Image (tube, rainbow, N blue to C red):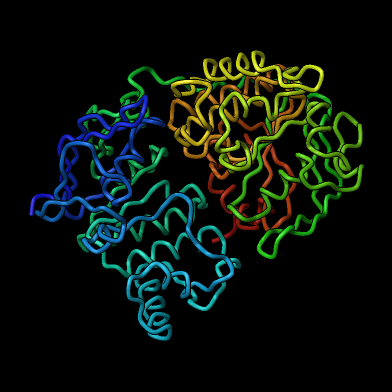
Length: 506
């Protein structure tokens, strides 16, 4: 068989946008095929059609030589298609085995399923204990649950959407070993990622989408990351430039911050100390679930502490809520775009107002100044190249990357004294990521203190002046980024906070 999946001239349109325009794609047996494109290029729509979540308007698909038009994911799975989503769909209060059973049409008895999970996970180098609660697992272990759930279906095509965004470099190598084993056994893999060096390391072929159209294919091993990025955007790629600068005065201080977890599956913060200087980009790395959300909540004012635990320009703010801190210039952008950083069903104008009402003077005599809010939203859209038909569109109508650009732009354009961002370029294409990183560097250049919490170690190395690792709610001593490499940082994220010990670790 020459192809596992063959897509021919598929088109899918929504009001105001053509998500896929005559897209064709062929995936061969035992091939790892990358799907690349800017945010909003049509990758998610194409994958949803393959998995039965969306029906194409025109065009057709063939899978394993037969016509293929799944009307729901169940039909796609029955045909041999499995998918690991970027956002995990797991119940924290249930065990590994119970979660996997929920994703199966006809699960075996729990005892037999537990045996299958143990055997399959060990065979593919992703060991799992079927009895453990998912809420007690790390982000990397949770991804293993999703992968093993797929592998138990014996798929002919495995779709993976941004699979390494929650993994340390060491965990990425384990995952890649598993994917290479699957490839050797004849399983085809459709791999979506914005990490182009990973694409070059793993993938056999790549299809590039731009503005909904297939603009070409390439061999990632023979094409540089920069060339692939420029194929995606159709223009030269801007590389962020960090200017060396002298240390400024401390503007944000955290003193002995200890905070219990807000939920049974959260992470408690333990004795955190941190000083961030004016004009500095301070990077905080950590594998998902090690206290990032809790730290941002403590800094934003969503969770209050003793007044002196958090100080802004020497003024105690630990007892203040988010609105009071924003007025003083302490702004935050959380990781979760929909529901936390933005209200899904509200327009971009309304979402611009929600955080900018005071610093951008978007209210007058207690009422919303609609024209001012609309002007602010349009300014964000234009400055940060947010792809949307209108500022009146609902936040949920934007692709994830475009909503991320809007959220970050909204905070940057309020001239913060301190900006704390969690995962600023998560799920964002190379060009947009470069633009966001440059905006953060420019903000620091203008004198703001910027705290970047990220799982992207390359990002932290690129823009941070100093770095600390967050592990199980503890923050390591800060180090100059120039003195570190990605391997050492990866070990620090696993708890080896002493750099000499990290270098000596096997």
